[in-house]
Image (cartoon, rainbow, N blue to C red; front, side, top):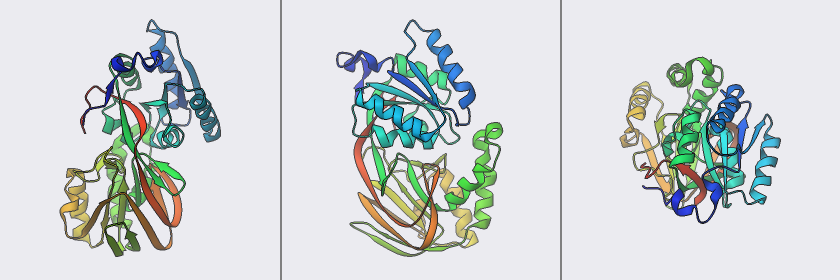
Length: 313
């Protein structure tokens, strides 16, 4: 689906949409230490004044600075970080007048990939300055926590735990391959109840996924029909943990055909109530949250983001 407005169309509304009001860098992200220098060198090479650049180490500092920018009616803020950092930004920027530019610095960079943003931060900055467009996308809500990609439970939780222990700085996305293999051998079924306004699943599961966008676990698509701006959560449950199902699921997951199997329950709906018999770790845009149940909802087109011209899903 094409983006909704070009920056040329929006210039009369705000001259600041091309050059950001500020750039916030997560100093704890995988490439944080060198990213600030790259950003400063980028602006030095352009005939524009360097914006306010903040390199922050704590979540508290990040939230405080971003809230202040929103209160000042900042038109555009670029945020450099991984999926967790972008989730924090969305928590504050949703329903605001401030547009988010994502400078990818994580391992999965799920939202950046979906939007078609270059994974090289200098190239992403070039895109934002020269030819980006604005798109309004959905954001999900897990109780009090916002998410921009996906909530998962089960197999991808194990993958996330394994990835955290791997040398991401050296191997990047290749770290997912051994992590998937390890998770497939360790995962055990658990009991889950997922109730939506139109459907219900109650029984064993090895994986639960609910997405406001299209990707989960880093590079893997949720379903072929999942969208970033349809006001719907795309959900599925892998209901069987036998070895044959796991192998088929792992292969088909990469190809995007995993929801075709009878062992996989699916639903597309505006909300869901998830109940568990015991507390477990959910992964919310890469961050772990332990719960024994949750309510999931979606806010339609609540976050304004920069993306390439006429970006397609």
